[in-house]
Amino acid sequence: MGVSREEFYDPALFAIAPMGFCFPGQDAKGGDLPPRCECAPAWRAPLMATMPQIEFVLAIGLYAQRWHLGPEFGRSLTRNVEDWRAIFLRNTSPRIIPLPHPSWRNTGWLKRHPFFESELLPVLRSEIRLSIPTRE
Image (cartoon, helix red, strand yellow):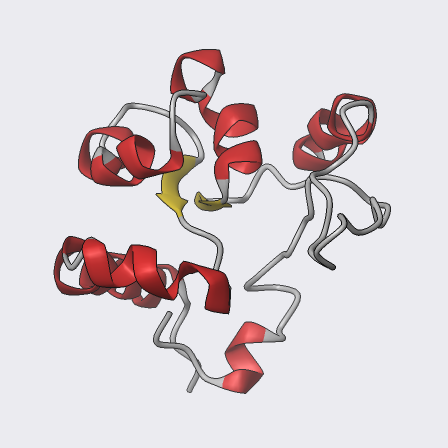
């Protein structure tokens, strides 16, 4: 994201909000199960309402993208991320950037989609930098 550790952990600048405030358990291969379906509807909208100052949301993973973008974006993570420009430039508040989950499991996806690093990440870094107030 192009921010310092101090900036990233400053609660006035960044909020990290999972789709479920519970650990859903692990699948047979040891990976995390998806968020439980009753969690986000119970708390996501009230939490987001407490943070009206949010300028943009990094919708990381398909579950977050479906929640923030709506059911028409439930198609696939790849299509959502490929359409990041159109999604980000929509007239919404907060603006949304769909991203893949930053997991070692997505290394292959990143290699197959070089636009992510060459096109999306520079814009993401620039937008984040513009939204962080300068401190003197």
